[in-house]
Length: 209
Ligand code: AP5
Ligand code: MG
Image (cartoon, rainbow, N blue to C red; front, side, top):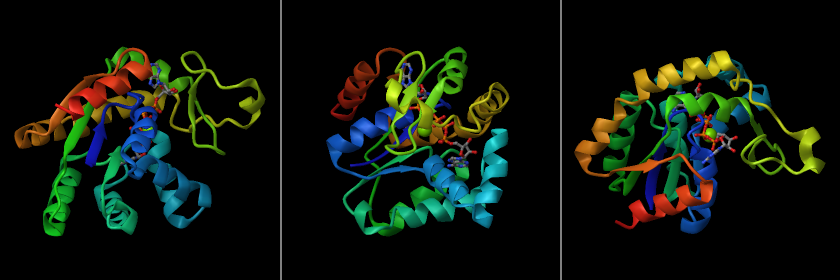
């Protein structure tokens, strides 16, 4: 299975990816997680990435594309992968398409998780992540156990200002990739509002259509 999860910030891509990669036994490749690991490592590249991410802007294509394309050529991706957060611009979609055609492989599905703008701010601002397990929590919708509360992380771009910019970037830069995949006949739309278990079932259903 070679697939992509697309959706606005806070749509639930990371939440759903964690469940689906176990089911399909494929690696979860989140460009955002890869970039945050680089920021945490304190490298020069990490400092550059941090500047873009903190403000809610996108990392430039010329930085993003080689990093992700290199990752999907790793041996663990030979039988499939789940991309989360890449591609998110038209040039990224075209670069992925070119690289996969060259490698003689094709995408099976692009799942678009649809959530209205007015729900996204609360999802992001109240999100907390566990740096030890990578698990994603929400203070209201998926509260973390009390004994791990002290170690939870609040992402630097989960402020109201950065989320507003991330939403604008999604509509301006990422939404244009939707017609690209519609034309290929592999776009699957899923309603991302409701219980996360129900959304996992919706995704499984569109994938087996
Ligand atoms: P990235 O890490 O990809 O962030 P994003 O796209 O903004 O998405 P999020 O991770 O915020 O949300 P999500 O959809 O994963 O939702 P989650 O499951 O966590 O990118 C971050 C930044 O890195 C970008 O802004 C950019 O700067 C840079 N970047 C990354 N990739 C790039 C690229 N390709 N090109 C250029 N720049 C790039 O859920 C959110 C919250 O909601 C959680 O608290 C969760 O518990 C809760 N929740 C989940 N599902 C539900 C539900 N059904 N009901 C209620 N609450 C729910
Ligand atoms: Mg995510």
